[in-house]
Image (cartoon, rainbow, N blue to C red; front, side):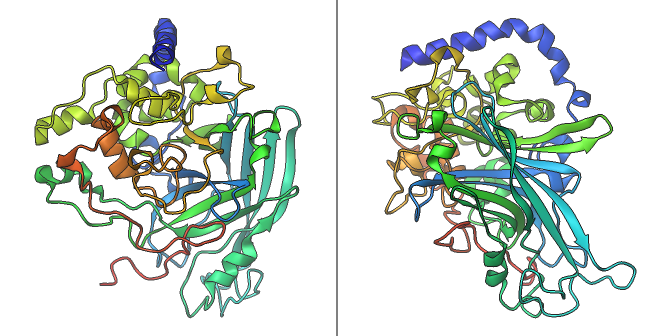
Length: 462
């Protein structure tokens, strides 16, 4: 595996020769915006701000894979009378690379339109109880079209006039919100299903990490910052073979996943948000590169040496050393190259198996492989009977960074990873408690789309 990593790094060095021509990519005015709230240009455009990506083998249907992406961070549930919506001038995408070249081989794309019956007569979202997804009392709803792209067949429409699950106004208006969600699910040709609508914010963490890493003495932990907030979620569940290289998930089980938003502008659609692995935009990419990083396709990641350096020589371990006196692991960080850019493919070390590098696909051409940032998933790893929130670091090979389940504690995993746990095979004891937010405040659902129903109570109700 060391040889493979060295080759990957050599490839990164070769493209360093493109640095001069890549400098134009570093100008924010060429990109439009980028992903996640911490990226400067997208902070004021929440409907296009893509916050999290999840990818996992479906626990109740292990012959399928579930892919999910969220938008609009920190939705206050009582934020009416005009509740939250997808942007009708944007295209929302979940993209899959199944041959390792950093380009999408399969794309699922949702576009939305409004049905607004309020006119000039009322300000209300609904003027009575809403007991079905098509209830006349629901005065505003969104519908979507879902298209699928493959290199072989081009674009095909798989859903027309799908209905978005509405914002959860409250029990008086929507006495059985679970029924509304169930009615919004759409079956797909050839198997599978899809969902679009409001959901609970399932990313659990204490965001006081940005106050000098939990207060400088780990005193600011244990508070789930996102508790009570909602997001807008898009999810799709499809047979594994539908996204695998050459349609064969047994020979080629590893895929790379990321999501993007493309927003309409006078010059056409521009990618304004991109997300694969969690926390990359926040704690790996520096502020001056966030907009650039998320405006490009993963195949171009290696052409920006400054981005690559943030992986091989990350900032966070140095900050932890300065504040908590925990020595930063030696660089270059080949372990982080595996996690973020190549996938894990080794038969020794703390991870006792080849895991999720796309070079493991039997039909992949290794000459086309390109280090690139995306969430990688080995669909051959079966669902875990008793999932561990620390995923691969705790020996649960179905967990992050092999895909991402809703219950994976990606903050604690990532904190341990940047401190070298994947190198040493043991947790850094001084940080073992992490942020002390070890699970979501709401239980996950046993069936697709798994993410909890959205809240309807004010976050500050207490």
